[in-house]
Each structure stands twice: as C-alpha cells, then as structure tokens.
Image 1 (cartoon, rainbow, N blue to C red):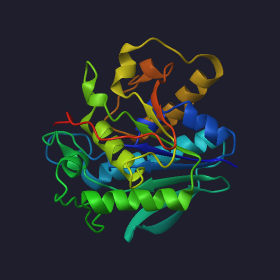
Image 2 (image 1 turned 120 degrees about the vertical axis):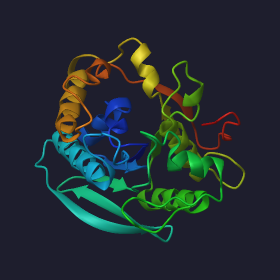
Image 3 (image 1 turned 90 degrees about the horizontal axis):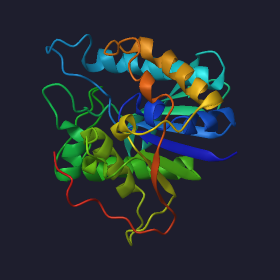
Length: 268
C-alpha cells in the first residue's frame, strides 16, 4: 500500500488544514504517518486552562481519539520508542491499522513566547531546543537529521507540510506552521538543493478567508474526526473551528527534483 507522511506543527493542524486528504489515506488503508513537530504546549502560570506537558498529553489523547474515529476502530494504541537520527522519539501505532503518530515534544510558540523553538532553530543554527518531555536536545542540524531519518524509515510516496511561505499571507500564519514546514523542506533536500520526495504544502490560517471547497461526505467525515479531538483540548470551546470543516487548500507541490530554498524574508 502507499505510504504518506504528514508533518503538523501542532496536534490539531493535521485535522484542520490537511483534512480530508489524510482522512482519505486512512480510509484507503494506506500506511499513514503523522509527525507533530512541536508539543503544542502553553506556558504555565499564565492563566491557561492547562499547560506544559499535562496539556501536551491531553492533545496526544485527542489525536488518538481522532484517528481511531477516522479508521473506525477502537481507540487502542501501541507505544514504541524509535531512534531516529540517533535521537529517541515517542510513537503510537493504532492497533490493527497502519496509522502511526510521532511526537517530538519541542516547545511551541504561544502565550508570552511568540517565537517558539521551531523558529529559533530555523533562524539560528546554534540554538539548542530542549523538548518538554526531557528527551535529549535538538539543534537545527540534529532536528532535520531526525526528520531525514524518519523519511528513510517510512519510505513515503509523498509528504505533506503546511506552507513554507505562510508568513506572507495577509493575516500571517502561525510562526510554528511556517518554521516547521521550512525544517521539513530542508530535511527533504538532496545535496544539490533539490526535492527528494514529493512534498505538498497546505494553507493554514489563510483558509478562514477562503470559500468552501469541500462538501458532502468528506466534509461530514472531517467534522466527525475534529469533534472526536476537540473535547480533549481544554483551550477550545464548542464550535471552535467548525467554520473550516468545509475547506482545505493545497497551495504548492514540489515534485522530485524541483529546487527549493528557504524564504529569505522569514522573521519572527
């Protein structure tokens, strides 16, 4: 069966911005890897309903519930620690399926920290990112090494990211969305700066301004999967993000051999 790897900056980006495409892969029985490039955490002590690793764990449970709903199986998962690029990462595989979730637990941008460690790694090759689950630290080189090794391990037919130029949108995409996509794109380059594995880029926050383009069955399925996730995330209210259940925008496709270079205007 085909294999796909989708890279989300936070737990929920995959559900909001890359569905129904990922959902279609799951229903077709593909080998489906989803990689969360940050923990999606919030700082403690700033009045949030949950924070730090406790909040990250809630979002993990939400993603597991969502993919169990997508695959129409019971919410039962097998944990496996993988070593990728010499770095241990946490993975969960949905029992009886080819769905695997991978978690880096890198600190996300949010609250009083509007930069986040993904952007710090993009902008400063010497920056050291310490995952919030106390696993060994990353630099830009080691982080992209983990992503590169993951791609070798999974052997996908194609991969997905959010947009590497989302910062140019009118309402400016989340900094983690753009930074995470840039890091994956770097990991997907050969020594000549050309794309090794086909990579599809998706719009993030920009879809809120765009017209609906997904109706009928897949709109209903995307909504059901999102509603399986939402009760696990205490930062969300009933109805949050329901207005994007009928849209998904694939922005750009980089085929094998296409040149790519990081945007020179990415700033925090």
